Every structure is written in C-alpha cells, then in structure tokens.
Length: 281
View (cartoon, rainbow, N blue to C red):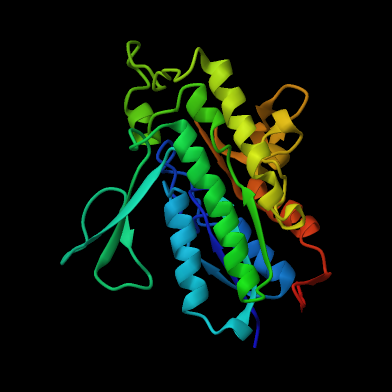
C-alpha cells in the first residue's frame, strides 16, 4: 500500500482549478500535488480549494491527519496562502453560495471565505499566520509525521501594495477605464514602509520557534533572504516578473501545466530522502 501525501492550499494547489479570466482554457492537467505524489510514489490527498485562507488550510490538514491512520501518512504539506483571507464554516441543508464548499470530514458543514475586509489588521493576521506555522509543525511532530510547510504565495506583500480584486471582477471590468483593479491600502503606522518593517520584526520574533529545516524558503520573504514558492519557481529574479510561459494566460497568473510541473520539481528537490522524525520521506 502506498503512503499518503496529504496537501492543502489555495488556488495554486486546487486540483479542480478553473480560470475565471480564461475559462475556455483547459486546466484539467495534473496539479503539482499529483505530480509530486507520483515522484514520491505516494497516493495524493489534495484538500486545497480556490480562495482558501490559512484557517482553511490548517483546519483541513488537521482533520486530514486526525482521520487518517498515522501509519498510512507518508508526508503532509502545508502550502500557505495570503494572511488577510478569512475562512469560516456554517451548517447548511443544501449546497449553495459562491466561495463555499463541502467539508470533507464534517457532513453538512460548508466552508466559506473572504479575501478582503477580514476582522483585525495586517499585524494580527501575520501573528495568526505565524501561530499556524508553529501549530502545524508541532502537530506533525507530536505524531512523528513527516511534514514540510511553505508560503505558496506571498503572505502579506500583495496586501500592502494593494490587494488585487477577484479575478472574475477584474475580468468583467476589462473595458471599464474607471475600474480600479486593486484595493487601496491604508497604513496603520506612519506609512507602508513602517508597516512592512513591523511585519518583518514579527518574522524575526517567531523565528526561534520555527524548524527551518522543514520550512521551505524560511523566512518566506525575499527581504529577509527567503522566498515563497511562487517567486522561487515562476518569477524571474532579474526583472521581478512572472515567466509568461508558466502561467495560464496573460490575464491569469496562476500556473499552467508547465508551471505546475516546475513547482513539483522544485519541491521534490527540497524534500530529501533523509531521516525525519524517525521516518523516511
């Protein structure tokens, strides 16, 4: 029996991803978790969903671990998303609603998410994200389960520089010259640079609690010498822009088939065949 590769994340990981910008493009190709599972000779359990935030990612991984015999788990991967996203659940009789989807482990519960206007502020959202890093790490270690975690997309940079609106909303307004594709960022401290400095200080404050060998790209921002997976695999360092042959279309920056293959290959090189927590990965 093959070991299970349990993964959760957002649209960069969702096996059912459909492009809002270019729905005519076939995106049914294998995504990076499926490709990586083949490389590792494991059975993939892909829990990711478009629009998901870190509460969803952590919760689905927790449930996945709890509902799987531990001896069947070969590796667990957390592909963290943007910090400002909010996830919550409701009990429903009938499936309905945009950005809502079934809880795989709890019948009649539906997940919902909000990309903007989450309660709190960017400092709280980043502390909450750092807590999830540590909680996920300790959860896996407590069961002696091999794991890796990483920021799939930037945690805070996009929000600080003006969060992009929903793909569908942007697509619907391509011909609207008065449409602003980004939300305005309002600094909490003196200016955006001060806010960014505060966030970087949070990374450094929590660093001692992070097992860096199991966090790919730590600290997950290039300002501190690390990276997120999107930037490490799909962006040119010279011009700080995405490689056009790795994305779905000029309007949709999600990875295409080649992009997912590159992400899978990169992660495979980072997941070494060494003894981790008493188990081989």
